[in-house]
Image (tube, rainbow, N blue to C red; front, side):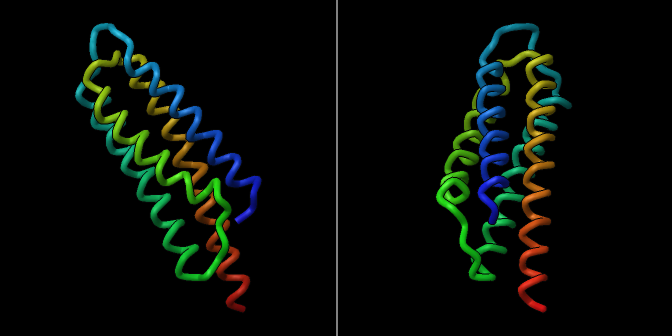
Length: 123
């Protein structure tokens, strides 16, 4: 996996982590739909990472240390999101959704690139 892609992914995780800091703010609360969206998108990001990790392992590809340590960061981020979501504002929840969407897009791109690498080596 290219170092550039891992750096992008790491930046996205850090951005989501910063957004998590917003989840501890006070305010009028968060709508149930927003909470459900944040939870679902967090789970989607974790699943995408797991898919990529499985592809890398099954095809004897080499992942750099940043990628392998990302699992811990994603898992910790997920736990913090789920812990703090009830205490956040709707605005902060929407910002978190935006960050998670970007993270999911980045993970999807990485997954597609890994698949292309697998396909090219299979030929």
